[in-house]
Image (cartoon, rainbow, N blue to C red; front, side, top):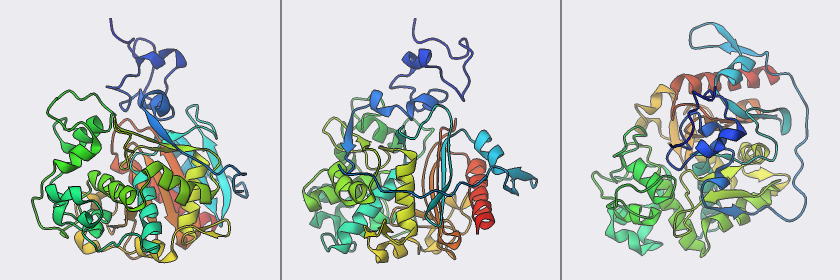
Length: 400
């Protein structure tokens, strides 16, 4: 008879009872209301590989609790809205704010706890970008070098004449459609290739690397920014080949252990064990906060240099002339660099963000790093994005 009806069980998009977990399938786990449970239990749905934390004690995050929920900002309708109202309206699972290196607010909703890993979606792209910055700083890879210098197999596809810089900034000329609502788009093929969804079409590539090698070039490399998740998977392949280890081990060695993470993180993997660099990273709220604080402190955390300062500063400086619609709807003066979104090309604030409301926000102006983990009912919601950014800037101004 199929899984039980959520409507018949009295379920809403904001809640999913433990008794109804059996209704979550490979077909529906990232759709509402199922994502409300699935994003916190991905290791129960998909194969994953651990990103190990260090065996010693976790790094300390000092605390200075503040009441932030009553802070007001201007909503899109022109009326004041509070931070508390925003968190309630935008399907929040976890919310963390660090100011001057101290946790001033840490909130959990929808059954999430301090030890619960949460899917990052494309926030994970920025972690992979930071790992690239580490290897570039050591001279192990050259951002201006052709990709085929490291991965010769790419010669057979559209990336054959692209450079690492092209994929870091998503400015290659490779054809790739990122339309989340079109089941025939290339981004749906990623879901099938990495094992997130059933592979209904036997003609589709069976693995992430197979999908990369199937893509063709349809314009010059180095043109306008176009967001394409597959670019991060190409980047992950280059990083793995450059150091001779899988991406999960690389991120563990270069980021997770040096950060003093509290919990192991994980990547989802395809049938060949290849990590979903473009969106399969899972971690806890505070550990995402450690990463955000490190990016705020120009690559240092807990007195230790992790990512080169030059890389972090470069990631705050994008070219707005190649950044246009539809991305300007939520970032009118924005840009993109090194797998990070830039809030305003005239400021230093950067974002790691993913569909369904995942966000790490780093704002040097206010000495602020924040994390918001969510399970929106839609892949994208410009109103939620804009109001969340306004709320975080209001928090920063109030604390400063």
